[in-house]
Each structure stands twice: as C-alpha cells, then as structure tokens.
Amino acid sequence: MTTPTPRANTDSERIAVVTREERRRAVAHWLLSAAPDQVAARVEWETYGVAVLACGGVLSAIRVPAGLVFAAAGTEDIAEADVFLSDWLDGGAVVMDITSRLYYFLVPVSTRCWWEPKEFPGVECLGRGAYLGVPVVSHTVPQGRAYWAVAMDSPGDLCFPDEVGALLHRGLAAQRRQTGIRPVPRLGAEHFG
Image (cartoon, rainbow, N blue to C red; front, side, top):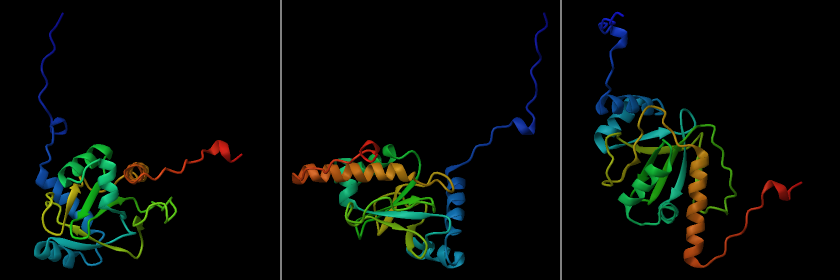
C-alpha cells in the first residue's frame, strides 16, 4: 500500500478572503448604479453621508413607519429592532431614516404592492419615478439622519417581499392587540371556490 503524496496548492485552489472594506466598496459601487448621477451621488455621500438613488432600476423599496416595525419587533428600542430585523430577514438590507421615523426595505424592482392602501397606513412601495436617500454603506449605527438598520451584505442583497409582507402582518396584529381592535380574519382560497 502506498501513501499518497501531498499535492502543492495551485493558484486555482487558493482560498480568497474578501475583507469587509472590499465588500463595502462592492456594495457602494452597486448602489451607485441606481444613482441618476454617480459622480454627484458619491460627492453627496462624502459631503452629507446620504446620496439620492432612483428606485425602479436596480432596486425598489417598501417604506414602513417605525411604529409598525417596532410593533412587529415588540420593542421601541432602535438597536433591539435592528437585531430583530436582521434575524427576521433572510438577507436583504434596510435603511432607517431617523428624522422621519421611516424604515425602507430594499426589494427587487419586480416587487408589487400586494395590499390595499387602507390595510397598512403609511406603507408604500417606491418604484419607478421615486427617489430614496441612502446612507453611505459604512454608516451602520443609529446616528445622523439615516443609517443601515440592516447593512447590505453584498451587491444586490435585497429583501424578499414575502418576508416584508409577513413582518407587516405581524406588526399590524401587534398594534391591534395593543389597541384592543380585533383583527379581521383572512379568508383562504377554500372560501373562493
């Protein structure tokens, strides 16, 4: 019986390590592809910490009032709500505008509003023709005007719309329990046949 001889690593077998800074640069580059003017957006990030991006090209967003997110999370503590969102979402990125108390769940362009406007007051899909202020990718703490409540982990890492929808329903149910309003039962497909 012969003992196999160890092989030397070839270039194709080497393990590549990507640093956090490299990932952030890749995310920033991808996000800037949504800017009407990439040079101006980069200057906005450097000057103001927030750049204006256009929705409807590479991303869209679902705007959600903080009260609904806090109700879903079971807390009004921003840091605890951020942890909840990270755990709730299977990937995806969320921006919080602290000043307006609004969360923006970044979603694929193909996302459509699947709810009645009265069902979730203040919740809106932002698509083609809408613009969104997005903080510089390294701003992940709740300071200033806006920050990444859930940072974008890699380019194009967007929220799954069904997970955002489930979060909206959880938040609405919690708000109704807090106010004593009984939820309206949802009818399943078996009631429509």
